[in-house]
Length: 596
Ligand code: GCU
Image (cartoon, rainbow, N blue to C red; front, top):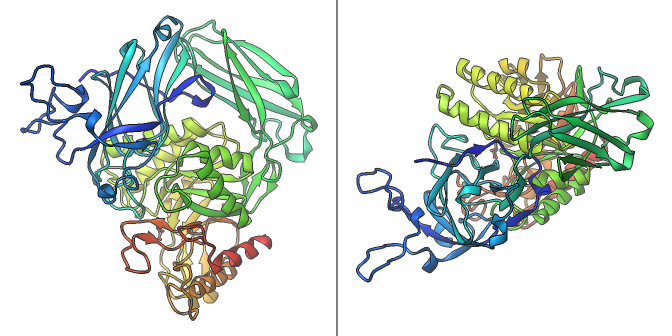
């Protein structure tokens, strides 16, 4: 089935003129994929993507999008149609788009169809033509549909399937709700025929004239790639507030790599959690100009310290799932982001772990504005099909697109490539390759992953993981007090034989908001409060502890949590309930962070 080219992800899509395709889309629930396969399970040419209508009275068309219900896009189907709460399978979506004639009289423009994310496996059609096939539920993708659009009514149809398979990323089991659908923004983006596919504006790392010893000069570097390998395109980069402006010409690959500006340090405000300063950067290519808000900072490690702008920092963090602040469903708006992040701020956080997959873009951009550092992760979670090359390619594509979307965000300091993965040579190979691949894409940030402590014999917790050689920060999850007796906490010893900073990427326990009792009574707020008290004291003894991201900010939906009247399909390890109510443990962590 011919398709439009899957293009590399366009950088900073929000900077371009676009038509939002958010809103009501018709949908058809297609449990047996009647709209895609014939009765011999071969893809059919008469599928629902045709959006066929009876032309003659005797015509047999057994579906009709326009008579089918609608749901809001972006949004998951699980919380919009109660019949689909547990549903995992195929749903077809249709949206009409009326385009005025003048759109087509713009020879110097291309039209990209952009999806913020679709969970999990989707096929996209425009006017009955197959545009592309995308897998992975948490990263954006875009197609050039210029040649497929026409004046008047256009029909966009998306087949979405969120069934789980062993070879997928994430694999078959994971402790979060498998929300299905077109979960993030959809837009038709107008770009010049030759446009900036990607660019990066970064403060050069310390060793090339960095911050240490208060060096007087700072270097800002710039690189760019056009969508065409063409020389001679003029590109001007300016930072008006700093009165900086420079013009370049692309090389035969349509790229530019250079040192942009050298500027006296005292003139440049660095991005910090206390002062999340971003500068408006304008980039003109030929006749069009885009702008971005860029913060300048450096991040590095030195022995067991994490240094932000050359200064040691303790990462007061919390883990978060990309779920709406109240009542579940995929988060997908600025408001969702602000609410969740303001709860983290209330806790005294300067850092969040966006688990276990890239969150919606607004989450990262709002965190940047609010001075919150970010750990961003791909869903290589638990026992992935390590030996399957397709699984590796899928994981690598998600890593590529996570970095492609957010690599200009100053607040992202850690790319995480995995969570709680079992040790094996195949796993080490898989993750080792991913770590090295991440460094080829971005050598300005730290690499990590959430490991597991091993050999917790008696009271000695040992971290012994071959992956230590690939990461800059050794991070691990531990659940003393929940999956192990809280009274062991004071006796715990930690053996972490790596001269690298340590982040405890998960700890915590469950509690049902409003359920009170003795501190040894599981599920009570007092149990969770005590667990936090014991854990904070225990973690204070870990040498080289550079940060924590307790599990988790808010109770979140999980199909693995079925205890009636307590869990009811929620993981209850939140410090906030699913309705945003603070549990007692909230104050324990807040007080601890005040000591950091
Ligand atoms: C794991 C895992 C989380 C999970 C948590 C829990 O460590 O990384 O995804 O939700 O434990 O058991 O609550």
